[in-house]
Length: 224
Image (cartoon, rainbow, N blue to C red):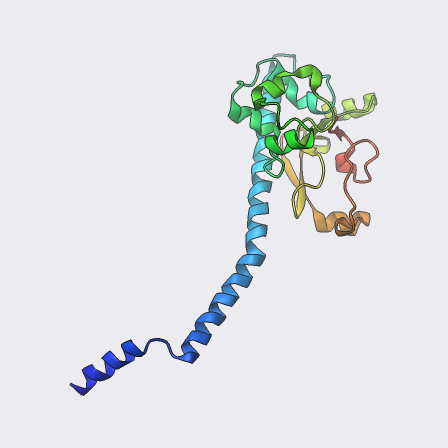
């Protein structure tokens, strides 16, 4: 009877002060872990999704090339990777249309950036307006030889050494994604860019892709 009474009393007593302090400490440790880890996990998910977008673009480019004697589109910048869309080499669905927008900068984000959020346009209509495509129209940059024929020849000779699609700028927390002409997606880490090129993103530095970019991998693409 005494044993039963003791157990019942312990249950009724609930947590002791020490037990409550231990629980609070554990919750604090877990919260700190989540604050640090969740943004990194989300960014890694966005990076992976962006890589998949570029690989899907490459499939469209390959289909286009098969119908054009193995040649790459002559257009520069965003129209380079959008040419298969324009010519119907990519099925014009909402899912396919959204591959031209980074998970870190969605179609809706681009509309806001371009002051078009109130126009009621959907993503398919948006991409079908070929004549309106210009700077910042999507969140990716496409191959641009900047009029240098040697750059175009390099793409044909050494596709694995020539970037054909990339993030338009530093949209992710830890890296930029770019894809070379062999269809391989790469990550350029933020820390490496800061160490190798003297950039300080926390101080407001950014990567301006294009012929004048200090980073070689981003010199052959443009967001125009």
